[in-house]
Length: 250
Image (cartoon, rainbow, N blue to C red; front, side, top):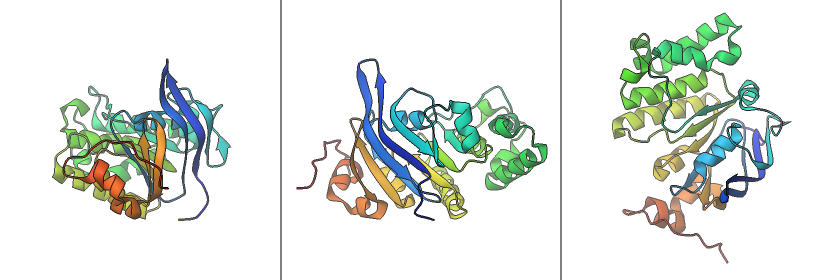
């Protein structure tokens, strides 16, 4: 991992009508690292990922791999190396597993051999998908659909993978399997920005983290340090997580 910046947000804000979902958010992701974004429901985590991938309008500056993204649409951002695995998986239920994966490689559609290799890599990473390659995506289990959503995002050969709630609604054994695959991908050099409801898992996996509350970054730092922070433990890691406003240290 280098100290260079792969993704940088500078004072990024998002409005839905009169509602401010993000308020001057600044963060960065470096090559080869996992950064976790944690916070309560409604804190703005999904809006942050959607802003990065170009799905919603923003103010402020987002740069990726040295390029200003303000004039890049969502498809152009994928071409630059940003790939988004969304909350809720959003697989095409009536299409086969293989067709869902191939759609993820749309930006590389002219490179047939490269797409074939990417497909085989995904099947090696998630053997269940290979077993079900001709099966309709809508008939898969929740865990298998999550594997498919991640695999589809990886088919674009990203430099940075945006992951939104990969553990949501899944059994612990499946969550462990998916997070293990994420760890291996990171060891192989994949950078990730992870939004995850399970703050303990997210902080254990990540190198750095940011805490969002009411659309603002209220805490940031080394993930292992935040894992031991009393404020984070009280709000997100206790037996009954209490969603409370952080006060800046004096």
